[in-house]
Length: 421
Image (tube, rainbow, N blue to C red; front, side, top):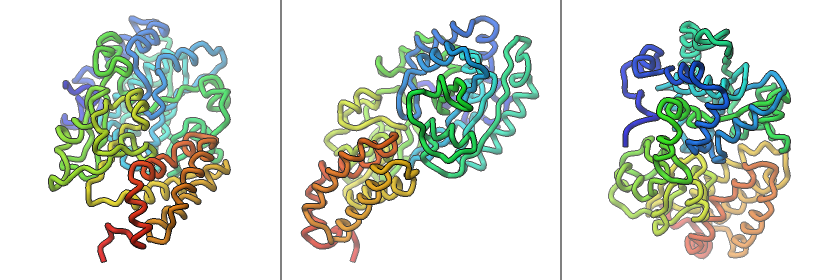
C-alpha cells in the first residue's frame, strides 16, 4: 500500500515546515479556503466515511456537522493527543515526525466548523513531542497558516498546546475538557455532548491525532478516493501499533480491515523464536483477548465487535506460548485501577476488587469461586460512568472465559506454572 499517513516520516527533517511544504503540505488548506465552502468540506469528509481513530469510531463528518450547526460562539477545536493507553504509540509518530499534517488537519476542521480557537491537549509524558509541536506552530504562524486572515481570507484561527498531567482518564473527551479548564480530570455526564457544550460550555470539536492527519488527504484527493481504501464500512488507511512477542514490533500503515493474522505474520514477521501464538489483545489494553484460532478477523470496528472485542486504538498486543495469561490480565487491570479517576463506585471499587482477586489467583491462593466472582464484578462495572470502567474489566473477563483452564491450573497447583523456581 502507498504510504499516506506516514508519507513524510522518512524524509530528512520530516517535522519541519519546509519539508512538509515541499511534499504538497498546506495545499489542502489552500484548496479548502479558496475553493470550498465550510459545508463543502464537511460533505467531502462525510463522503469519505472517515470514522474517528481514537477508539470510539464515531463518523467524523457527522460530528463536524453537529458543531457547525450550533450558533453559539466562540467555538473551539481540540486535538486529543493524550495517547495514554499501554502499547499505543501511533499518534506519537505523527506528532514527532509530521506535526504539520496534524496542524493542517486542525485548520481545515476549524474552518469547516467555524471554530476560532484550537488546543492540542498533549500527553504529559511527551516532552519531546511538545517541543516539536511548539516549533511547528511557530513555523505555521510565520508562514501565515495560523493567526488572522489566513491566506488572505476571512478565516482566523489561533492554536495553543496544553500538556496533561499523566492521567489516562483525560483521553476521555469530557475529562479532557475538564482538565483543559483547570478542573479535576473527571468525565462529565452526556448529553449535552461537547459539540454543543464543551470547553467553557461552548461548541467544541474533539478529534484525535490520527483522525486529523487523514483530513488533508481527503481534501487533496476527494472523499470518493478515500472511501475506496480498505473496508467499505470503515474506509481509509489505519495505523496499527504492534508490540509484544513479534519479530518486528512497530507502527504499520495498512488499509482499514486488514486481517489480524496478516498484521502479525506478514508485517510484524511472526512470533519471536517461531514459538506458538497464544493470545492477542487486538485493540489496546481495554480490548477483549482473542485466541490463536480467532485471528483471521478484519481489523475494523464492526468486524471486531462481531468477534466479541473491539478495535479501540488499534494497538495489537501479542502473547506467545511462554506468556502467562493470568499475569498479563493482572498487569492490565492494575493499570486501570491506577488510572481510575474514582468518580463512580463500579469503576473505583470494581478495578480494585479485580486486582485483589486476580493477584490471589496468580499467586496460587485462589479458588474456583473466584472465577464466578470476577464475572459478577464485571457485570456491575458495565454500569460505570464512562468508558474506562465499562471496558477495564474486558481483558480479565475475556481471559477467564477463553483461558479458564490456565486459571484453574494456578488454583490447583497452588502457584503460577509459568514462574521460574
